[in-house]
Amino acid sequence: MKSLRLTFNEHGKPNEVLRLEEHEVPSPGEGEVLLRMLASNINPSDLGTIGGSYGTLPSLPAVAGLEGIAEVEEIGHCTSGLKVGDKVRIPSTAGSWQNLICTKAANLKIVPKGIPAEQAGSAFVNPPTALLLLRRIVDLNPGDWIVQNAANSAVGIAVIQVAKKLGIRTLNLVRREELTKPLINLGADVVMLDDDQAPKNFREYTEGKVPRLALNSVGGNSAYRLCKMVIRGGTHVTFGAMTSEATRFPTRFLIFNDIELKGFG
Ligand SMILES: NC(=O)c1ccc[n+]([C@@H]2O[C@H](COP(=O)([O-])OP(=O)(O)OC[C@H]3O[C@@H](n4cnc5c(N)ncnc54)[C@H](OP(=O)(O)O)[C@@H]3O)[C@@H](O)[C@H]2O)c1
Image 1 (cartoon, rainbow, N blue to C red):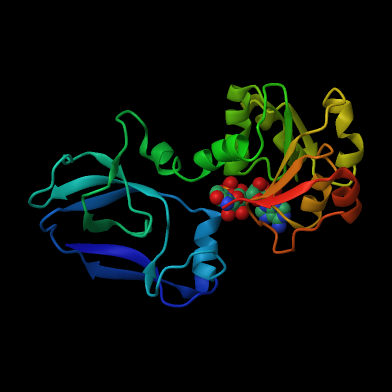
Image 2: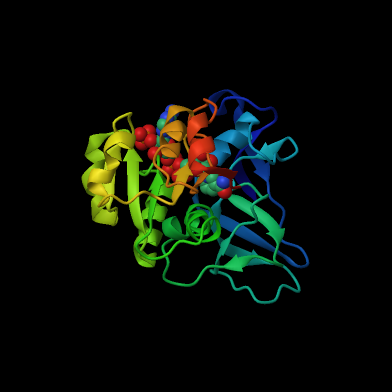
């Protein structure tokens, strides 16, 4: 059966290195299934993978896209546990930017019925990242504050929603004022512009409380500002780098405030 896929054979800018290819997909053999993609994500890590800057890179040529949901279209011999029409998470190494995938049936995760494909397709990277950031870095208690930059990102929104459920208060930094109301509606406690005023003024909005944890997915001056918004002995964790600038930190805050700098990946 003919299928289309977006592949790259060298690293570079997506518009320069991605190629749309038609190729023949085999019928599923023993222990295999044929999957039809329903929803494929575009995550920043996809751009890093295509560009060659991501931590783990596939061997080339590769099909682009790490996350997506597919429907089982055809089942090969000796394939137990899956039915035609089941929605599954595709293996992360298969490449989600394609129409059809013939792959091993073992270890495919079935998505519970009733979850829209678009929602399931973006459920496996960013929401679990938010949960782990809030649960595994610092032992946070209900009522504790955290601060994050890029609060309107997919991870940032998941952090706001998960924190709300856990009773953790969120101080959210964004680049545009019009994001304030939508983020408050999603459960954000405080939204501020990510500028040099934020470290000076934030206590006015947090009842004088200072966050125990800072979540940095930006880098550069934004990461520097976050260090100034963490309590003495608090933790600053970097899990993304949306600007290409190096993560910076104010030395005196490390020395006199004993801030711990960590990474998460
Ligand atoms: N370590 C892990 O396990 C892990 C897991 C998931 C994601 N991540 C990382 O987390 C980050 C966010 O991912 P996502 O999928 O949530 O992103 P996303 O939904 O695509 O959102 C991107 C965010 O980055 C901001 N941004 C873009 N360029 C910027 C710049 N030059 N300076 C400052 N802010 C900028 C955007 O703000 P505007 O709207 O103002 O442009 C937006 O808030 C990425 O770096 C991703 O790789 C890491």
